[in-house]
Length: 73
Image (cartoon, rainbow, N blue to C red; front, side, top):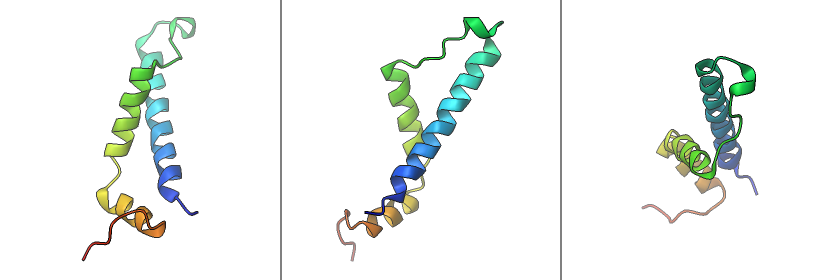
């Protein structure tokens, strides 16, 4: 099954995650003071942001490839 939307979403999520850790690092005084872990809520919020940034056309295109959307007349 070709589900490029999954790899696209993962890449977007990883960019968000890296940016979040970068922001945390830049806001702290030392590397040992940085909290490098996300809690579940923060991870879900990043996932929502990553998904919301995907254009609807991109999602539709990938879903059409794997036939998981209703036919649009």
